[in-house]
Length: 549
Image (cartoon, rainbow, N blue to C red; front, side, top):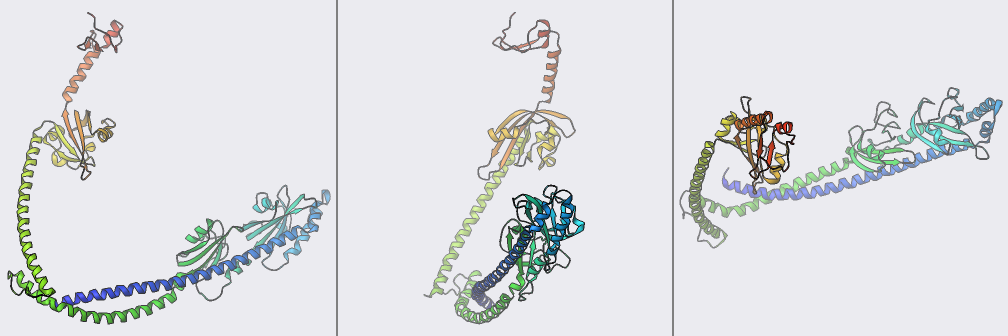
């Protein structure tokens, strides 16, 4: 492939890339608009369905509320409960008989009706004989039903041994006295029928209810095994709904399928209503539109490429002459073939190239000179640093430099002699671990260095052979203003023998039976040994006692 074709190809690619970018922007905006419009339509449809089902649920619950309140207001029930004494068993039998007709209503109504004693909470009468006598004193339907109508959300009831909704209402006498609590249990078939009603337009739509424990209340359409009050609906939409929110969410459903979900919290019923459709179904028309848009874009891009090739050739032809001339210039032929006499843009470009070549040559010479000077300075500086390092190695004290991580960055010969670690062994290691100085180091050295930049004191270090060394340590901290890096310079002097001698002197001073003291030049005691207190009764810590002879 010749360079001429290469330049033409490059310019063509620029035009094609610009056209492709323009088509991509237009196509993306069009695709995004279509997708947003379709998603908006899907959201509106889902919201309409959710509102319709919410209204059906309200009507169903309101119907059951009216029926339980109507039954509770029946005079025969109040008369039966008002009976006292020996007639009470017979009255309870009559109360049960009064309840039986109300269980022979339409399907999806009461599974069982029961009356609870307002004091003991036990079921006095029920349409199911097995439930009579059962304790309900701690049940929500009993506790709340004494004060007015109450609906207990769907739950697994031990009274009917099934999933049900419990509704209750008080039974009162003519004077308002509480005679009992009427409770009814409704199966979930009515709710399931409402949830399973579909328009038949979509194949992936699904509606279900969840309770406050995130359990399915109605059977989801795509869940194979029974899930009502057995399995939890684990999805982000359910979490938001149970937090008391209502809205729309684009996220995975309980099966991990990306979906558009309308979630609505029903505070009166303490239930969450989930209405959803898969994002794949919602975006099917957008895919068709995108494919048509892609085919049209490819056709336009092909036509644009042909035009770009023609334009590129008209631009690159004059440049080939200059390219050949520059190739000769690169081989040392400074004036060979350069069209410097032309008055057009090509001639101006050639003249500028000549001036550039001259400037490049001058700069190259200057760079070579600067590089030689820099190399000389680096060499001299390196030699100077080496001389300083050699001088530091002559010191008997241990001279150590730590980096910001408390690792050894410099280790002189004195440190090697003092601690037994060679420079190669010490470099890069943490000083505290190397000298076992963690337990013996006074607290606050690092804080003092940060605050004042200096610290002096006595430390106990471990040598490589395990012996201990007492050192007088002087430390200084330096922060580079440009790089903000921190280094610490440490100079340690071995005072082990001096410390041992000092300990021996202190031991002799404290154990001696003679009267020993240390006095200042102004005639005051500085220190008394214990013999003074034992012999003369003087305190061993006199504040301002003058010497007397």
